[in-house]
Length: 229
Image: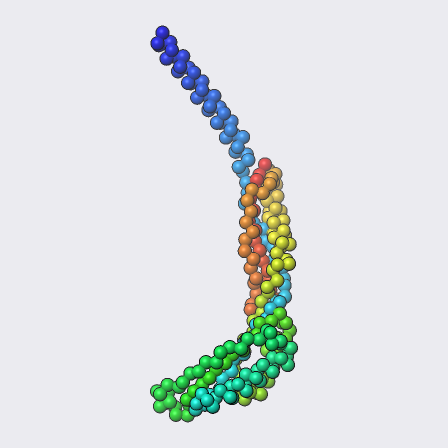
């Protein structure tokens, strides 16, 4: 009787394992097609014009004492500000930097007694959306150098694009469409059909172009995973 019970239990256990194996196998079989996917990238690029300009103008004056240089440097600074205003740059877009004072070292004076004892430097910077005004001012910097008798030194200009907001959604949509076209081509080549998006990554917007050039290229790359059916 005991042997019969054990035999019956063994048969039930074997059947249970067989049934479980069937359902597990069937489950994996039905799951496998749904897990197939393809990862593609979509690109969107757009040519834009710079909407922000930066300009910096440095100036120096030298002399035997700081007290004698300060009034001269103040006059030079006023000349720079007037120059910027005359070229259409507003006061609100202008930042006046702090003056820096340096004293010539005794060794340098020993080697060249004609060197000034003090040199005081200043800088004025501009950040504006009036790109044309900065272009105009930069082209006339040599006139300012002449007017200040060489006190104005180097000037640096740069241009950037900050208007991503209005075009962001449209560019992402274009990149996503480009990614779907790539997925459709892949699916056609492999005898599949494109399903829904499983995951997507927007990527990072890049603004390409030389800082001194007005023309820029905005680029975004999206990565999209599509299910294949």
